[in-house]
Image 1: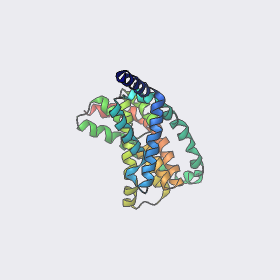
Image 2: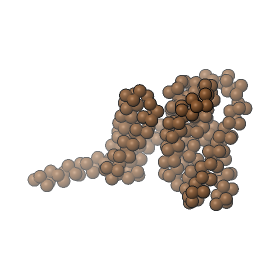
Image 3: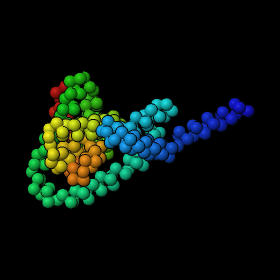
Image 4: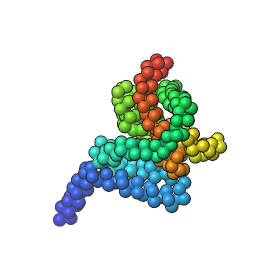
Length: 246
């Protein structure tokens, strides 16, 4: 009888682990736990909710033996919300339209320089370390938001899941380093700070920028969108030349 009971429990657990809604709930709970830890830490950057949620989810997936394909069947519903969330960033940006009109040239030059360096540096460093062409291609769009990065990677012959991992790592590291670097450089302009954070660390950086203030977040959102657009055109043009170096 105990054996039969154990089989029922095991069957129920197996069914739950295979249920996409289970992993949707797990993602939301992991982020809620990350927010709680973040607040308890006094809003320290190292305890950013996204980083905590990633650690929790990876630990749970490893402990249960669930693969990424099963997880993303539920997680994709949250991924879908990236689009509406990105569009919503236009609201605070509209409030900065007068500053944008004055700063368009400086922002355009910064975008071209920053996004180009992000592509070239990642591919060159990976090539020098002996990475495969597929890995180098997957690294090229690491500084743009996940949907754009994965589409660019797949189109160019990269590995989209690997690109997604690189994007998350870039965003987390960028958000961790943003405030210390800005403090070191004594940069106090909201527009400059926000644009730099959004360009280097996409959506995760934009969330960090909004924690600084609304204006910084608005310019970070602008940089995130423009970097994605620029990379979609620049990566295909730069990659053949970069790959030929190795």
